[in-house]
Length: 505
Image (tube, rainbow, N blue to C red):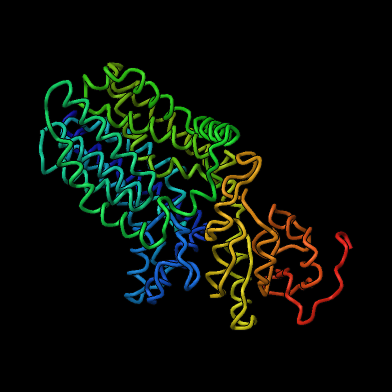
């Protein structure tokens, strides 16, 4: 009976996890994140030979997902629709992540069937991970690469294999090319190698570094020469390094902990009692160390404004694996472990639909849907030489195909590098602006607020524009019908200047 459970348990758990993944995906099949369309715009410009740019002729690194953009660009070049390709690839990577977890014991042989079963059920039921399956975002791809890098490193660590150290380094490079913060994987692995060398005299850091450098080195040199900055433009737009930002990051981490309470408690126990986990599963402490590093990073950058705790979605496979090992290392018997899993899965399913930052948030998010309507209207009706200034930098520029001024600065170097007072007190990624700069560039259209615009200013950039005298002299408000009963509200540049209107008129 026990042999059958060990043999078939992971397969049954995999089927359940894939079923939950499909259930979540079907429930969210009409939703995509507006930010995903920023990557799509870069990908299609790349496929069309315009370069990895947001606006043709402007080299701004307004994405942090190079490998995801490259893959989508390749798919577009091969004739696939970029939006649909992102959804199919997201589903493929999410499912592959679960499959890799099911085979984890064959890569790192110290993992038993019970741990794999627990990890699969925890991950498959976690909306922090599954929300992103059809979102158009890079989260499933990064989750897969991070898990692969960790398993390869554990295999190298246990066998002292140079080949596996090189493979782990290559996986780290691919992960860091998908999102720069995944470079913390290499930091954790490198620190573990140096510590092991100091304690036991075993090498391994050189093959690991070689694996990373052979891919990431040329890529980093290219992106620095191409864009001219050490870090992506999005980092400068979002991060200020203030205490307020750190406080916001702490709040973000605390809310994530509450949303995934049992998993986080198990993972935290494993970090506090690493020696117990090591005794059972070997040199796996590096995973706990990496999760600590990642959490510190999330706190430092002030968290994220996207749903389902996106910054933890990419590491959720490792969190679930580490939590499962932490529980598995305790000599509490199969029944008590089963009770933990049942309760954790039940909490995951409950929180998915009741926690405000998860599917409740997603269910009310219509930015991409409405932005598509506005973008398509602009494609059909705007002059070919028009320029639009907007806070919605995804769907509107993507569908309109117009040059765009990103008023939040993600795709604008000038706005991203501005110093803003009170950084960290607002919404992450929505704090930098320069209304006077936007008006000085004289865009054809200026949109306040979000997807379909607003007559009244609602964002910091809107408020600054509203106080600019030239704006009232040069622009007039217009409302257009764009379908589905929606209005597109926008300020248009007048052919002839008029006397400045007073604010409030």
